[in-house]
Length: 81
Image 1 (cartoon, helix red, strand yellow):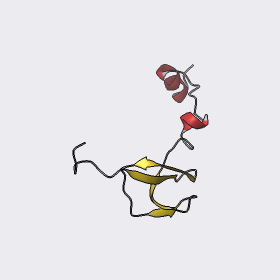
Image 2 (cartoon, rainbow, N blue to C red; image 1 turned 90 degrees about the horizontal axis):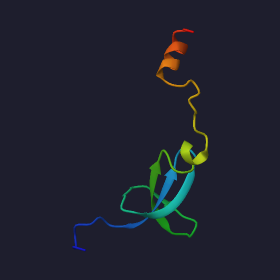
Image 3 (cartoon, rainbow, N blue to C red; image 1 turned 180 degrees about the vertical axis):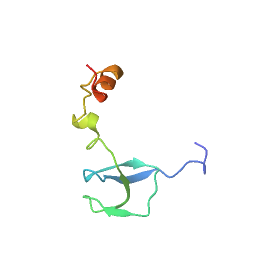
Image 4 (cartoon, rainbow, N blue to C red; image 1 turned 30 degrees about the vertical axis):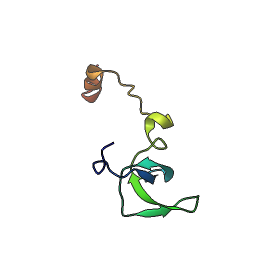
């Protein structure tokens, strides 16, 4: 690889703010915040809103649209047969 053009790759901790789930992984993201991990080392902390711990696809808590298609929703909205 060409020197000086790639961002620094290091270990960081991602924190899912909606479920308080944390995981350690490699990334090029930077952060001013740090956190002490279970191994006693300090890593940069990246806050995210959604991860596999809170995303509806992974948790199985997806909302199913039971109303059907557009026509059914229109009829229901305007109280048509």
